[in-house]
Length: 255
Ligand SMILES: C[S@@+](CC[C@H](N)C(=O)[O-])C[C@H]1O[C@@H](n2cnc3c(N)ncnc32)[C@H](O)[C@@H]1O
Image 1 (cartoon, rainbow, N blue to C red):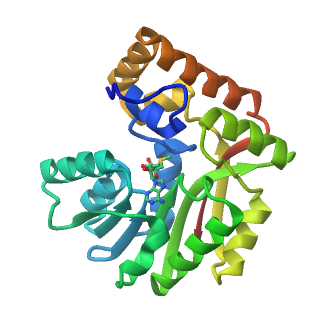
Image 2: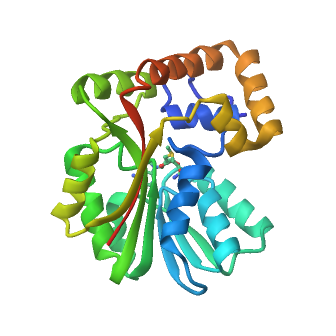
């Protein structure tokens, strides 16, 4: 577990990662699986993954569907962990993680069959979302598909954004379903299929699905035995629960 992190002020995803959580998306593995089903990846196709974190999704799709993945991740610790896992999985020839910023995708000149981005656009301002979406569109081959997994909000957007940003300690700017569709349209991407569901990041049921029983026990143990970590994780959990009827995950595929 990371010991140098200030649990009171660090971004929520870093706090959860320090607690042992590997899957850091609102709809968890199940929602991601839905995206992969829609994608219908074919062997040899190429995927650009934004904010690849520990390489969980990159490794999974390279293994399952025999695709080639380039991931971009800015946190050097996560990059190192992802590279270790890729090597251990014997996938170094198919998965590459670039340490970099998704606001500088122009450094990547290739175009891809798919761009995958999970739990990253929600954190951006409206201007940031537009910039990244435009870069995504530019990195897709003709007919390429954008796979997205984010948070959506039903109503009282500004109140929800303020309260989430306070508890996650990063800009949390979820959109309504209509707004997600609109920001995609604005860069020339049309949503083909979409699904929404419960925000389950800190639900025990989803955690067991995402992290396994043993992984969940370890996380719960880490949280319970570290008072600062416990305080912060419980605060985030309370916040998600308070908003549960008004926020959730959205996955969509667009082209
Ligand atoms: C909430 S986590 C999601 C990680 C992963 N996509 C997943 O679903 O498990 C957000 C990730 O985005 C990375 N990140 C944040 N801003 C970034 C940026 N500007 N460029 C690249 N990565 C970034 C963080 O380091 C972190 O790994």
